[in-house]
Length: 434
Image (cartoon, rainbow, N blue to C red; front, top):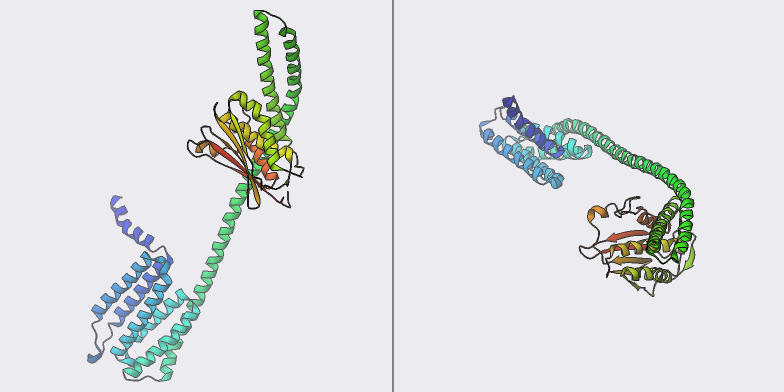
């Protein structure tokens, strides 16, 4: 088996070398021309017309090997290389005709494979042009090296050259068109299959998310009433034990406070699920982005102060009034600010910036936290993906959905060791489809 494999390797390597059409053409043309030259060398010539055919075949073979090497090294210049080689081949055949008897030279037969094979590569019209050139070269060689040939002989040679050359070129053109059509259909089919797979995946994801959304909506509705009752009872219980001055009373007050904090957290979670499950259509009204951003900053400033986080706002006065849904956009900005406050450690800073860039307005929320790793960054906007112990994984997804409803987009950046920045881009002029 080892011997068989080793003997097959050269043939396999040769086949791989000839996989490209241009290499195969160069090899076939070399075989045809070198073989034809060697075969015609068997015909005896007159003593004064004899040439060293053996050496000529060797040099001709080396020349063809050089053409194959050029095509292999520089495939982009294949057509130019073959055009130059065709001119050299015609000139070599003409020189052979002139040196070996002109009109009586048997080497006129080299025109047949030369014209036919090149017609197959370049096309039928080039084949007809080569037929005319070959006829003129044959006639010129006969005039320069008598005996001369009659026009009928030249016409006969041209007819025998042109008819098969045109037929081969026609077949080659049809084959190329058929191959191009097959490649085009294959590309269309591949693209259709790719789009179909993507649509199928999106459909499965949409069905899954629709089911999750319906379930979330039902669960949130069912949970809100018990949460409200627990919160009310905890508030009443807190009022009852608040006035008692004892160790038990102090402990009871702390426990009630803890219960109310957890109830508030559960209420916030249910609100976020409800916001995701029944996302409202935006109601566009002309408003000021700068005022909305400043209002969000003032809203979160007391909580940020308790956490030891600074809130900074920088607005661009060139940002014009524009149409947007203030409630929804405020929610998107608030989600990013809350994330920034959680990322920034005590003593950190969250910065809100607005700026006008051409026909868009950018709202950037930056923090001085630890930043976002590439692994987490790839999944930031996935629904239900979160790195927080009690997070829903819906905040960024809702923010992106709000931006898309406004015809905008959201992107993020996180230089190493420099926190993270989320940038919302809104068109100043509302798109028609929004």
